[in-house]
Image (cartoon, rainbow, N blue to C red; front, side):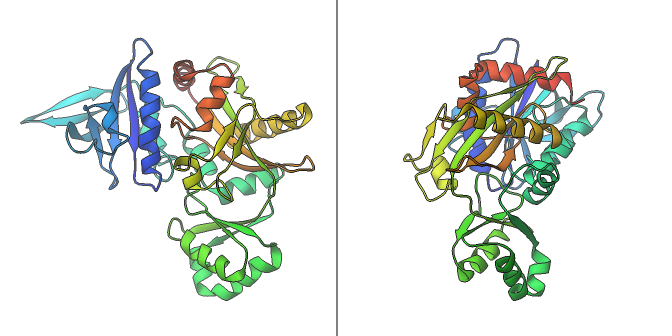
Length: 356
């Protein structure tokens, strides 16, 4: 089987993808009958076939050599790509895609649309599920309809804000209670997220978040523990959901921002988290409901807050969670009985089974 392993991308999570693909590649390399074809996406959106050392990818040295630009064959009868070789072109067929790409243009349905055009099976959520879950405003509206508890929230479009910033800020302060979190609607890994405690910092955070997206989500702060569940959808006829024990994040910062996730060694992951069985079961049901209702496939990480009085609030659902060495998703799945290579095998089986 020739597997296209995609990495990089144009989003703010480019560096995370480079770290994730190193782990995924090392696990896939342990499987039999898999030929890995590394496909890198540069910061400016060009696709390249990378044949160099995988070790160069996390250091962002992969574009220096051993790359050839890709020209996609859009005939779905023969999915794959061409690379130019002297005066001719070489065709590279693909049997499966693993999009280890995070954020916009990789986790929002865009890359999945390419796979659909190629009629190429792929790991993870489809176009709809990817788009729903990356857009926090859309996902939160869905989860409100499902009556899954969430923080009280509002969302704001850039053009509407710029028409009358003062009015929009006053509307937020009238309907939500400080302190607040301000987030770009379409970004992951806590990129562009700010916690604000007054009107001045709220305005600054909104304008900073608009750098990453044209929509911003503002939500009230939930004081509680940060807990996560990992989900693996099996590829058999039952499409059973394997859900991990809960993992807890003890952040080195005031909240689990980008630096706390990937740079600060003071952050701690506790697996399994200490949690009453009844609370875990409630969280489990919310996670499965969110996964199915948001049209997820294959895998997801579902994040929650758990307060001192035992209340559970859904934070977000991530359709292509980080796969770095310190990421929660692979650690939780290992605890659930799916260490790296076994997890990759199960994800491949699910992808080949289709998205029906």
